[in-house]
Length: 210
Length: 94
Length: 104
Image: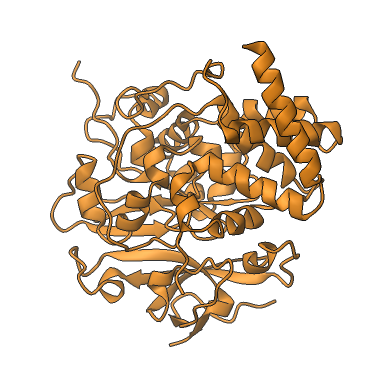
């Protein structure tokens, strides 16, 4: 599912054999001091990294596919994103999920101009470009030009709605269900939902011709 | 603490430029928009940033602005908008 | 004044779409913040982290990578709160360097 928009797999590699940088040493030093003081344990760190690794865009794709096939679920999702994703076992923690729906008239795009706020419980860690100066500066002011850089062109007349994630909300775009997908199962539909379509820089994928 | 504004109210973002940790973006100060929805009240991040509790909780709103009102050279459609979460103390009636 | 991080709408170049694999040390920095900000510990909250990053100064903000900014900010806050001392941190860093030298 990730291949088209996510060139690097999420497999965890061991740290490189190159000498540690100053900041890598700093991370180790802070971690070891905190463990020695009993503030955290090595197990705490390991378990938390495992939670981070378990969060991937596949979770968001499952939510979108469910909304596409179940209109009542979609209504709940749009009314209260956190509660609706909790039904699928996803915990938003201290943030609140707002799901914004693409329609034939409106296309949504998510950015955090101030830092990098991102709906990690449904999408995992953000791509570098989402946190970059250029995306944060321009997505808010020239969304169509940024979309074009991602190869996305909207039909004439579609309004663009940008969401700047400045406080405690986190945003997920509910992409338009592609045409010609009536016969697909929920799992097959989820395969069409890319991470980039849930950020809003892309549309959901078309099904492969049989 | 009751919300001062209701959905649909016209509000203006205050023109204030303090240093410190502020979550109201520079580009939106002084711009007028409409309350899109009322959110919960949350501890004030401007104060939490200094290790304080951020109490009392501040009401948060999603405020919708027309892009043509925000950027003088906006290239898109008149119906294009930007939605931003803004704390009550940054808003005044418009 | 405008914070250096307060970028929305500023002129900028094309978006570089290349992505990097998150290194284990970066995920551990992420984990540290999650653990330190948990209600049971309440040692560094997300807002303090952000404020610390915003006050790094323009040169450091640009020079450091994303998680380098995070670990710098976290460390500064922990020092400020006396969770450990500068001396303890310095000795621990030296110990790590010596460990590295022995292992190579």
